[in-house]
Length: 132
Image (cartoon, rainbow, N blue to C red):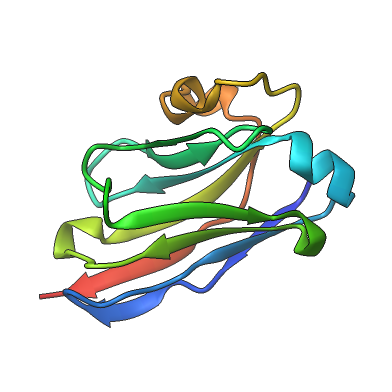
């Protein structure tokens, strides 16, 4: 069983930045091989993929965040990050970390579009609120 613990959400004004993080309860070697991703659920909307990466550094982003968000993995710290810049009120929501074992090279775009039941492991979420 993999545990994922998010932190670093918060309240920020439009145009500001946040960097939530996700700490995993696995070894560095296993963590580096997983597909990892950030997903969000905005008020009144379905949960959606925001940014993902595969075990070989490939990444994928939702169109709405391209150029503003960056996903990175620090395997030595067993931590996933989401650098969020130029935040907009429509970015408000609960942000969840996801992890999937057996991740193939080039899988990041598919992981981004995964159905909820196919994401693998989930964290508990961290709230991000962007005020206008």
